[in-house]
Amino acid sequence: MSDKTTMHQLEKNLIDELNDNKKEILEHEYPSDLIHEYADGWIPVYNSDLIEALSSDPSLAYVDDHGLLPTDPGVHDMIRTAIYERLIGVAYEWLNDNEEKDVA
Image (cartoon, rainbow, N blue to C red; front, side, top):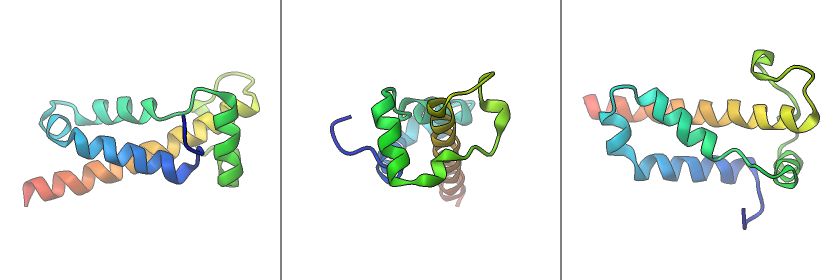
C-alpha cells in the first residue's frame, strides 16, 4: 500500500470499492458473499502495514470473535482479525443502507 495504512483509509477504500461495484453486489444472489470477498481484499498483507494500522488505531489490538483466530495466534493474527471484523462491519452497514435505498 502506497499511502499510510490507517483503519480509516482501509474503511474508505472498501466503501469506495463497494460503491464502484454496487450494481453487481446488489443484483448478486448472495450479496453477503461478495462483500466478504471485497472486505478480505482490503486486509493488509504485509506485517509493517498491520503495525501501521495498529499505531493509528490501538483498538485493533483486540478481537471480538476469538473463533476467527488461528490456534496460538500471534500479534499480527490479532491485528489482521480485528481489521477483518471492522471491515466486515462497515461492509454490512453499507449493504444494509444500499439494500434499503434499492427497495425504497
